[in-house]
Length: 198
Image (tube, rainbow, N blue to C red; front, side, top):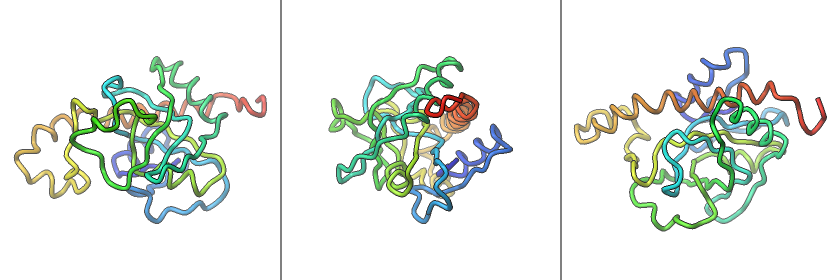
């Protein structure tokens, strides 16, 4: 399991204390696979349309980088995570997820109607480096509830009074949504391997 932010890392560890979880950093800048074991990214994402409210579970079928390169997610892992999310009562959304080199905040209207339903900063980087890959994300920010890109550096952002209302919402939403993503992965790992019939 891979988690980009420290919040995502600790929430995943909380849910799955016996699993190996790697803190890969925002954008996974220095992450390299240590083996060819499947990699599953766990955490938060931003919605690129108005049809995905905060709290929506995203299990993308493909991820796309900013150059348009597409990477297929492992269909067995996608199926297992989909079963898990459904059993937990969260109808997952599929489709493509964009990996951006910078945080997408503010106006997102140029993404409306496009092929990507959500955005993160790591998936395509990881998918391009490993054979079997999946991502389980929960929507945090949306076009109607964007968050400032200043939160990439929380220690600085928290000192800006104009961001305090965002901070209160993030303190409420981000941990529970990160735990939601981890719960889906935790249960998904217990679903039989559909590819091998076990």
